[in-house]
Length: 404
Image (cartoon, rainbow, N blue to C red; front, side, top):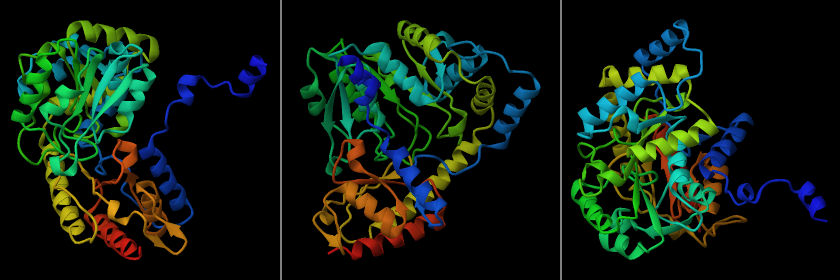
């Protein structure tokens, strides 16, 4: 009987308990509609619409010509890790040796490696919400328990030191904090981070994962890293990469910079799972970090212009509440005023219904806030053209006006 049951359902409990990525699922649905000839504006995916800068592409081409076609070292080429070490020193004032840096197949890979290296079954992991879709699932894979700490629109989606203190128990192993934030665009100031660091300093068993992948898409000043504070520095693992700042999502290069003992653990795990990241992509990433940074600033300026545009347009939509994002390229509107309304036979019970309604009726792809542990909201990515933003806002406004 057990054998027959296994043969009928051979997937492990671990994978069956894993939720699919809501952002990728919505992007796939929009792609299917596009394939049917529907003019869909996809605001669901968190991906810069810019092309990778030419000097970075040239480095990738040169790597092919130079025969970088063999296995790369598990933690990444030393030259790339030195470039990352220099970046952390020069841009962030942080001292990480190349031995403390492990290059992975994207920041998501580096983050998952770090969670798997730290979390045992039953360990608690504090996740401020709204939170990126994969944090909870990574904790699930490690056998840990996610402790969600909610921050509301009124808090600009940032938790307080009192909330953090209240969430910590003797089982707490880790906190994952994303600033600038996906999905809200909120950024913790230096004083806000220091206040959280002071709480964490009193709980020495708690490690800190600082997801800083949106570091350079910042509209309020220089980036503030969680690793800058001496009282917690030896417990911080920084996650970052080239995807967002350099428009290199497809290159799949991220990294973790961490205490040496943790970097060694991540390296050990990566050696069994994936080995080293793409040799060609690593040489391109090296050029990104060592070359001119003007491209980063040019894209940041464009994203800020788009932020201002989408904020101005959504402020004109009745029933939608928004904040002004400080960074990243997302808007996270509160849309619960539409729950219980309907258009024809379509009833809007929650944000998932609203996201599907906007896809089917307005032909705009968004993601329900439930995926980010925050029902009552939807996420929109404005990493698209001004024309798409204007048209998408008009379609959404018209579709919401039809709900009654």
